[in-house]
Image (cartoon, rainbow, N blue to C red; front, side, top):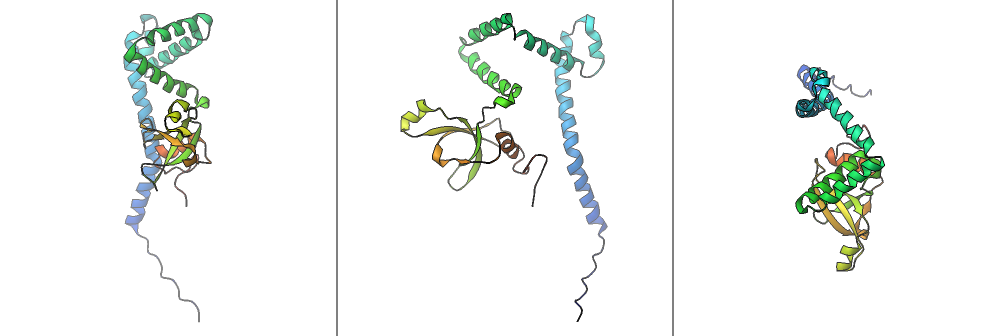
Length: 214
């Protein structure tokens, strides 16, 4: 006896329309958001740099991004000058002066570390991505080992502690600094930058250029 023929599926125009729209949104919106953020940054820099543009190069004001180009050129020049003997002396003198200002030195020191991280990502402070039980036993969060030399803190409780930064999703610039026993950490096989993508994407991204998988 032949098997029963499965019923034919009727074309649902409304379902097709909805799915097509959602697919279009998922494909286009990332480009729109990226372009909008870039435009906001360029406009923000332009409006603050253009008043400083001397009359000799006033043509930079005639097109969007002129102020940004001037800022990039100025920062590149400063970076080049800081590489010679005189530049290093100026930077060192400024650092020493700021180090004597109680409140300013805290802000300056934190900002300096952050921007050094941006300028040289290969020297990341995140040594390894790990899983830690946080905020309670039985639940796990992605953390990053930031310092393994914690003797000045570990000696207080007599344990081998490791400094672990647990970022908050989706904005990893805020989070929690935890000192945890090394034995409680579960190392991840992925590098820190890939683990950070999972935090920012709320766990959606699984691999480079990928999204949710099966």
